[in-house]
Amino acid sequence: MLLYIHVPFCAKKCNYCAFFSLPTASLNIEEVFKPSLTLITPPSALYESTPISSPFKISSTARQQTAKQTILSQPKKTPQKTSSVQSLSAFLTGREIEKNSTITIKSDKPSSTLADAFLSKEQAEHLRNKLGIAKFQENQIIEKKVERMKLPQSFSINFKEEHPLLTSSEYSLWKRTILQELSILADFYKDKPITSIFFGGGTPSYIPIADIEQILFHIIGKFSVLEDAEITIECNPESLTNYKALGYFKMGFNRASLGVQSLNNKHLNIMGRPHSAMQAHQAFHYLRTAGFQNISLDFIWGVPSQRLRTWIDDIKAAIKLDPEHISAYGLTIEQGTEFDLLDKEGKLEFASEMEQSQMYKTGSGLLEEAGYMQYEISNYAKMGYQCKHNLGYWLGDDYLGAGPSGASTVNHIRRTHAQNIEDWAIDIATSLAQDLSDQQKGKLCTTSSYTTEQLNHVEQICELLMLRLRTSKGLNVAEYKALTGKAFLKEHNKLIQLLDQNNLMRMKNGYAYFTRTGMLVSNSILEHFFKAIREKYGKLELQKK
Image (cartoon, rainbow, N blue to C red; front, side):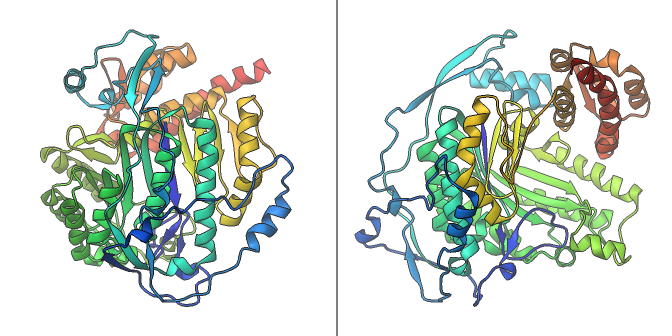
């Protein structure tokens, strides 16, 4: 199972960003000052036990109006610039550590799933041999004992930190509620092995580092986090310091994703990014010298005024830094963003579609020549460094999303939280525990402001295609037949032939996959598949009813 933590706070909203986030300027902070972080030698008194208490008590008689009054009546902190010492491990003292250090995993899916995401069958086989994983027969139940991640008994780094968020009532509410939500989720899913934890946003590296650690250790203490779990934190260059990078690594993060977006100052300015190219280089070296051996860099191509030459310069500069993973996303103009407004006013100048196509193809080629294998439409990695968290999504693993706007899917039941922090907090306080209990009994909630839906057969088929075809390996046609009872090639024969003739899709070794050209127009192609699936299987659903 995957676990995603949404941190909805950032220093500044970028011009292209459509994700739910709260820049500092939008919060109720009377005095805004820059965060300050200083390494200190802590006195022993800092390690006294600090119990975590939930601000709300969940009960079957809780009423949303009462909860809202409770939430809104929380006293607001008076803004003050005085320093406060924050112990990074105070809350650990006196905590009961999980006695059982192992957890038994039972699965009817091979544990070599990640290997199957590789392009080459030989490479996948090589990885299986390296990990000691044999080939599995279909429908074979796999049972094995694996080590559970342990909480450290102490932490040697402590910080003195000033931060504007410490005076924000919205931030205080988010922190209390995220801990409460995680506790409730753990009550229902504590026996599910957590293979990946991802702190995303927003900008997780922007919030106080002590709170990141408190949330991470809260997760490790309550969930069954596997010892080899991938634990990622998203960072932005302007909010990352050498002390923070060291702190993240020491507290247990083993992967960092750095939001570079470009190493060209002109393009950074156009995108509204608050950092410079020099800060991006500096942030990367902070992570590397702190000990991170798995770093991903995020880039965007197709930016206004960007040309093929300047995009190639970005790719070459990224390769020179030698990260383990690179994500390169094509810019999409999302409704309601600053770019959306400027584009409607005709104030943005983009490269032609042909040149943008060359950006994608040429960039992908350069990355592969440098040893970064494309394993998904927008993601490239050195051998063994594919992002487990994202692969888990694309391969259909269950996942939990905590925080405002977070989404979870477990056993084909999807729950999506409200974006508004107050609405989300009310739902966690009054509804979440009961709703999860009802879900286990086959009931879906109808009283909360978040949405819950049971994915029907048509939606499951569409998601199978959408997620698997994002990967370079593609869709296993046997998996399609297992879900639908029909042969993929026979059922979509005309469309597949047309795609093959236009060099958009190929079939090989039982997999249907997009070519690089096909990946460029994948959304359009998928719509044709979805239309055919809805027409056929939608009628069958109606007949069953």
